Length: 136
Image (cartoon, rainbow, N blue to C red; front, side):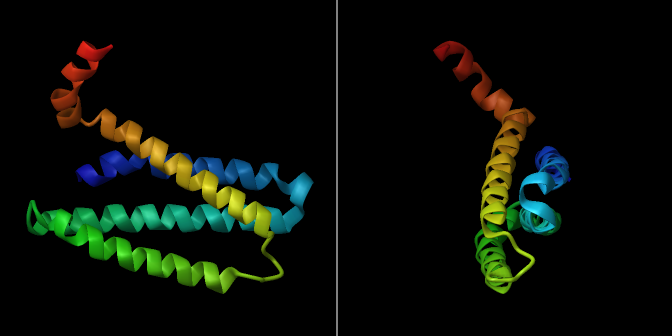
């Protein structure tokens, strides 16, 4: 399942970073900060896991199905995320600044790690590898 080849580093990276950040933030923001960081990381992790799973499942039916499912999948996943964020808003166990910072950092980390994985995907290296050598 090629989708998980691309998503693996991002899944592992966000899981590890979330665990480290949740433990590290305790002295400054307390348990609410740790819970907030953990929940923010879980939302980003879950979104990535569902995206890769749906793409892999669609790819089993047809080589073009993954492309066809991507936009509806994105819309549904974003609606679920907005619903989760609305549900978590103004809860006493959520430290809003810690949650927002952790959520943003997790999204940036996932995007960077996925881009790195995409760059190392063989067809991308074969297609674009010679161009990068010529322009450098």
